[in-house]
Image (cartoon, rainbow, N blue to C red; front, side):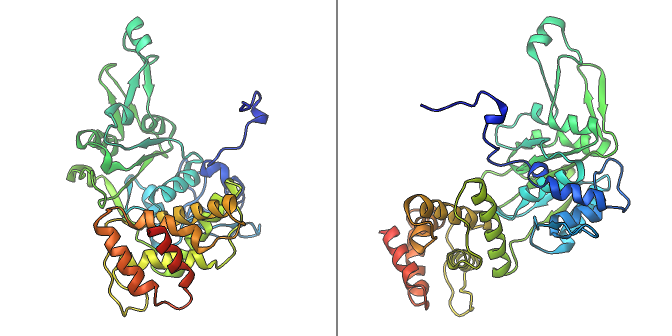
Length: 371
């Protein structure tokens, strides 16, 4: 019989704490040492926000800041600078390029609150972006401020914080355009009350979007003009991607009580190599062209494959990550189209993996998983 915690102190920790909670000690150390000018309403200066995302050491205090984003420094600097202006920020990129991760940490560093979030889906209504109503109060007393239920964007405007809209291109086009007045006039009209909510200083908005997946809705030119777009690229090198995967798997593993991944683990390097070669259509040495499957094979999917393999090793093995633990996960990531992708995967195994020195165990494990 399951035991339900009866006291808050007995309750387990959050599976995934918000950024401002998980990295509270880093944000506190940065705030204490940050003597540079801060835009109105910001918890940190733009310089300190960039340091928080890129990693480094707090001047004078010695606190080590872990990197949240591994990539070109200029991208982070442009994103942070955009939020210090009256332009909203659009993080654009293919799936798995850390758009959501960067968005969350930017909001945490600037406002100390990353929870003012609208999750975009095909069914997101206009009320999710604007406001809704307490219908019991509405029917009893009619339209009033008391009956109005402010959405995340409206709350961010009133409190001078950062609002986040995830997967903006998933939202229907007519609902997307409800952001135009908010971003251009910094005002949210409430016609039912004959009033409005004006954004106070410190408010801005971060949206994420990708144009690779199926089912996306193009942004209107009017809405796109309201954003400064920053494109997040895939990791430039294999070493960068291995570093990203290792860090995130380690963070996720600690929260799930999984074994630690040894630094430079062979299986992580193999997963990243396979994904990069299939994604790019050529082997790492540039000698052999390979066909690319229909999936994106993103860094986020590599993290998922390794984390799942680590869980298999922990619960059904000896705790050591091996080729057999990741083979099934790779198969699931690569073979999205059972007909075409399976042929591509088998060809890659026979022409590339089979002949690669030191990969015999990986080849056998993937063959068994594909059988």
